[in-house]
Image (cartoon, rainbow, N blue to C red; front, side):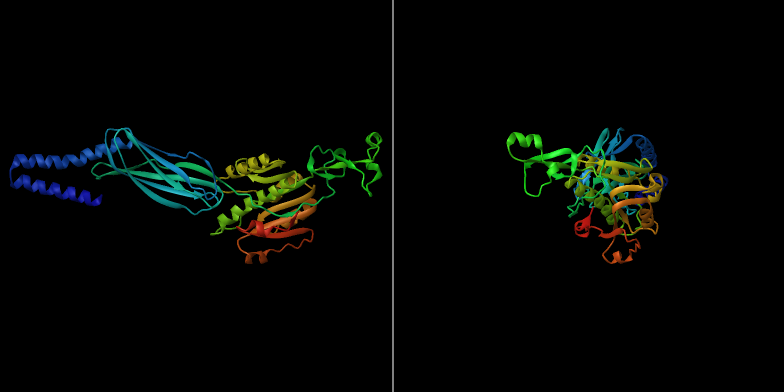
Length: 397
């Protein structure tokens, strides 16, 4: 563009000398034309400034990891002036990281028409992907002048986390809900308030489980199998205070969330209702969600992801436990990054549970050696970023 301006300036000087030295009428017309052209282009730029509108269109705002999704940049030209070149500066980033990627798109725009350019993005980590049009540089038809429009147009795509297969042991513990109304459909238990099944008597069965009325009708002993309550009070706590600020930031955040959801899925697979606790960025507080089905877990998954914003602020866990005082539950599991010194003491002092787990997400296997607990009642399990299934295969809940 600078070369074009220099060329026009040189041509005006040449036309001026041509007018002075040679045929005045023709030279005058030529001089007027070369002087008028930049003025006309300047006026065109002014008109275009108020005639160009842009937007970013994302058809699907919720996507899976590693799945490409199309994004459309639509620029409309409402004027009668054609645009030979428009240059869009695009940035995109995951809110879990401060690493910003960018690229440029060049396109012409016909008068009284719109131009759509489609490009594809994807993400191998969950989170909110923000797509931002920093600005669009629009040039006049002769590229003498340019102006910027369409500044800070933003679209968002929520990339959902994956749930990993996790093997572990679900313990039958003493804490049960005294007024339980949810029972297993596949396993028997010891709750006499609900009958799970009736079967023939086997040697060794307790006499108090014999169904005497039915046995008298069938002339054989029929035994009652009691039900197994599945709404045993268990809590899974997600601490989103991340202590990484490096190339591992995205993998650590991704692993935190997916570990949280994978442990919840393990509980569901074993018909164990439970409570999920996490910090909700939109509400600015910790929230609790009771999970007893796959639909409940899917709703929590979406709620976690869409609650994030750029500052990634999260209250410390002890602010939650101050309100809850002493928790008396069957099992408690916290998922956290490399912890500060207070997390273990908070769990030890504020949580009364038969099983206490802390799953600590670390960037590498070597980083696991940095974890120091000092509390015998808390089980520590390092979870290497990106290796969830292999890290927590022996967990007890």
